Image 1 (tube, rainbow, N blue to C red):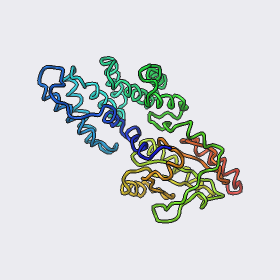
Image 2 (cartoon, rainbow, N blue to C red):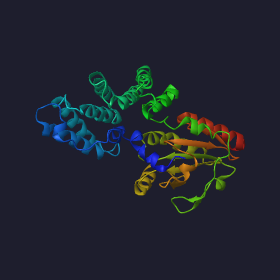
Image 3 (cartoon, rainbow, N blue to C red):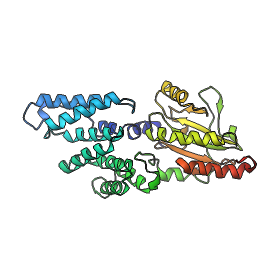
Length: 335
């Protein structure tokens, strides 16, 4: 069983990939003795620590001012301290921020320089994953595949989490690869539930009303594990809303299971985006543990008999599946 803390740890993979570096390398302030340049060690160490500190403040893609500060400082640092012993981490932070803030072409250049100039550096491993994602953003899927395979086929990396993620992305249909980690949900765990009875639960939604699958027995239900900090979740939301609006009066309901860390951020997002279906704030992992959710977004489409028919559908595939189940359940209501 996967705890909610596991999902929390993955937050950086879904909103700001730069955060990975903070846990990956156990970053802390670097004393001047660790600088290998031999010149202005304090300045290099302080500059490095400054960038790391600012990176920790980067929480969402709305933090454009912070992102620009990181980009400017990182470029200056790389130019001034190319031989600093952890300059590869600054390359990685810079490349990741550029990719996350919709400048994938610039991010690709930075990440490829990192891999070329520092091939043995620890940050090459996650950089290959982000490089593939950047190419997917530009619909250059052959290049993306090349980066993913370099990660998977490297004996140093092929058993790691980044390689596992790359494998999942390679298994995702190219038409669904938008340059995000939306295919990250553990396929083996998710698909194991297909064809089985959905696990029920009894909780209260954000309005204090009783919420369970039993309450919607006889209806089609999309069980959606998500969070406001999850960039792929936010990217998918317009498709989810469109499907809901089209079929909400035809025995279709959505139950959102939010893995947010801040209830106020969740409620503000729901109000701003006009999301009206029931939501449960699963900060303790009660429901996500039931379904062994390891990453988000994870979705289960449940038919009117309570059987899970599909897992992790995206975009038009979700609407097509809902339409089919609506047709099976109550064809007289189908438009």
